Length: 356
Image 1 (cartoon, rainbow, N blue to C red):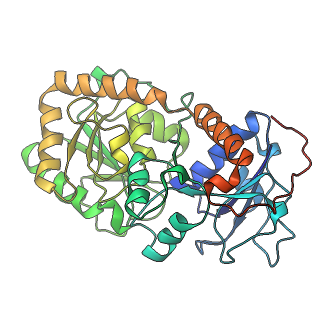
Image 2 (image 1 turned 120 degrees about the vertical axis):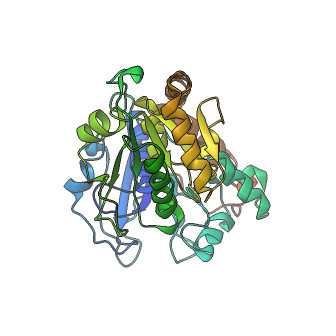
């Protein structure tokens, strides 16, 4: 099977949404398919060189990169193509269209409604995004839930859960959906109640908010630093987002043994179950967030129980499993594209190096 992904470029390290594209592409390539990733400067961050993006792929030989250009000559003949463009239709040879829905109320209503109302299947990375599609009137058959995965060989337990300092970490972003101001407010209240608590934040760019002197900020940490020092060095990982498509940093931290304190932000519903795998509060509820963090810092048995359950639960998120589910659905879609909203005819079967 031949699969093309149209993806935006991203600052290094890639954003969560771009990471999902690259990881799915890598996993499909690992299952014997021919995969092409073509990127353009859709986010206006500057297009990195191919070798920069390849740093985040497990098998860059299975991918090709090209800047978005005029015309469709850059697009290979394929079975399916993921991504949205300004033109409503692509030449049939480029493959059956598919959508990859990774968020809602994050990129703007016009863009997100276009994503949902394309006449093709939509792969939704979280269960709540399927619910959104139904609310928007998208036929059930076009909504397919396939969660992201994790590289468990990287995101792993290094420091025993019971042997961690009183430290809280969180992923900082100035985007309004991430609720950084709520995290800082909750942690300020926590610091007054528990002065000895340590706070570490990390992000991809200089902080746009004024951070208190007691917050240690790590900008663009290396993979080793993120896993071994930040995630494994924290008792608690805090997510204060108003909305999350899925929330990769949350399951990364959980896989590394940090107890999760999060808001009910949409994506968290796939892995954060209150008092089972995490403590969950309403978005923007600063008092509840602060209370949940303080509770786990004061009650080590409860923290260890939640962190252990969370670490075990997220083992189910595997990129190869996601790719296998996607592969199975694509086969069904190719067999009867009309049933998924595509017009009859007009799809040429491409020549393949690998076919499953």
